[in-house]
Each structure stands twice: as structure tokens, then as C-alpha cells.
Amino acid sequence: MRRRPGLARNGFCLRAAAALLAVGLTIFPASAQSQRERWNTPTPPFRILEGIYYVGTEGLGAYLFTSTNGHVLLDGALPESASQIEASITALGFRLSDVKILLNSHAHFDHSGGLAQLKAATGARLIAHAADRSALEGGFYAGSEMAKALGAPPVKVDQTVRDGDVVRLGDLTLTARHTPGHSPGCTSWEMRTTEQGSELNVLVFCSASVAANRITPPLQYPGIVEDYRRTFQTASSLKVDVFLAPHPEFFDMTAKRAALSRSPGSNPFIDPNAFPSFIARQGADFERELERRTQDAAKSARP
Image (cartoon, rainbow, N blue to C red; front, top):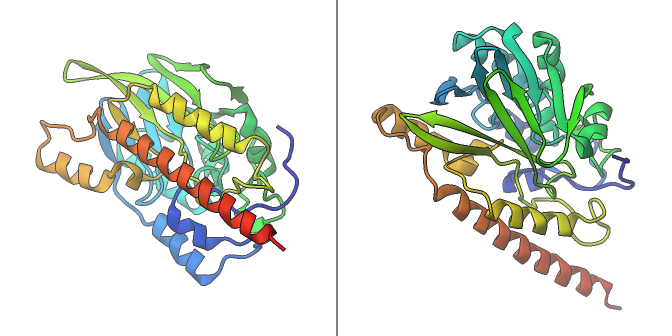
């Protein structure tokens, strides 16, 4: 992927994060630091489903997929989150050296920031979408290359994937679903698992929020509007029994985790209605935001 010229505001997953950035921002204000600290609040790891564990922080998702031939870790949260993720993996009884593959949902510092440390600690190979490779290896936010506060420790990508490519490790199979817009290489990871005799389709959805991405000229990157719309079409066609995401509030993890603790025999993460309603809301939000920004741009252009 070529570097995108020009400055851009960050395309965070959280709406609240839009307030963190301004064009050309090079340092975090105090409010940004407090948001970052909230994202990085520790939370105990736990089992979501057979072979799928949450090992992220309170505000940033990281997922461990286990097999008899080693494990796959998806996302690294912030740079300062890496040690927490390592501790969560070992607290669950797994060895860091058994993590053989690292995956990334998208090259934003709050999801890729810990990958360099995690790669060094585990010796795992990093696999990510080809369109986000330059951002991961360059340690920059695509379209905001000069905004140093949005950077992350550079990390070498060992293998790239495109839509439909399959990553295999032992009996683990994860399929890359390219869902761009939030970042050029935004990738949702899909897998099947069995829980209490039922076969389930699990999706860790990258994101399709607009937040502070530029979706009117000058665009965050060429083709961003078309990418978002294709992503909504793609996402709407997927059958998802278990919806997960890089930000746990997207799928109401706190409430579901509490419900799981109260009634272990009934798993609230299994909800075929959760993802369709979520993606419908994000699609509607996108169109409203595009209309609003288009109108604002037209007003600004009037003499």
C-alpha cells in the first residue's frame, strides 16, 4: 500500500475518541491521556467459547484462539497494553511461546500498538491485510503520517492476506474478511467453533464507524466512501452467531460477561441478532454523517 498524502484526523472506533484529535495533532491533550488510560484499564481474562478467550483490556479487545498445535492472538491494543495481554495469557494457563501467529484487525495504534512487544515476547509470525502493511511497518496512521501521536511501534508483517484468505494452525481455521473504510486494510476475522454440540459462526468485526475519518474531500484515502458502503453490504450478508470486536462495548461485553458468570449454562455471547442490528446502525450512522459533512462542506464553499 502506498502512503496516503496529507494529514487526516484519526478514524477511531469510539465516537468519544473523535474529540481526541485535531488536524496536525502531534501531542495528546490531558483529555486524550485520560481516555487512553480508561482504554488500558486492566480486566481479568476469561473464556468466551470453547477455544476462544478474551485477553484484552477493559476498553480494547484482544483474543486468544487456542489449538493443540499452538495459539493465535488477534490484536495488541496499545503499546502499554502488551504486558497486560501477556499476563492474561499466562494467567489462563497458556505459554507465550505457544502463540505462533499474531493477527491484526486494523493498523490503528490502539489495536496494533502492542504487536511489536508481543511479537518479540512470543516469537510469533504477524499476519495482516496487505492494505495495512505499510502503516504497520512504518508505525504511522494511514493518511496522518505526520501526526506522531497517532503512531505505533513499527512491526514487521511476515505475511499478508486479502479477502477470503484462510489462516490455519492445527485445527484452527480463521478466514479474512476485508471490511475496509475504517482503515484501508480493515479485516474482520471469521471462524467456526462448536459449543455444547452446536456449530457456531464467530466474527471479530474490525469496525465501520466513521468517527473522525474524512469522508468528504480531502478524503482520508481515495475510495473511502465506496469502501464503507461495500463493507456494509459484505457485513450484512454474513451469518454471525457470536459477534466480537476490537472495542468490547461494541458487543456489550461487560453485561454479557456478567450474565455468563451468573448463568454459565446459558452463553449470552451466542446471539444471532446482535451483529445484524449493530451493522444496520453503523450503516445508518454512516449515511447520516456523510450527508451532514457534505452539507457542511457545501456551506463552507459558499462565497
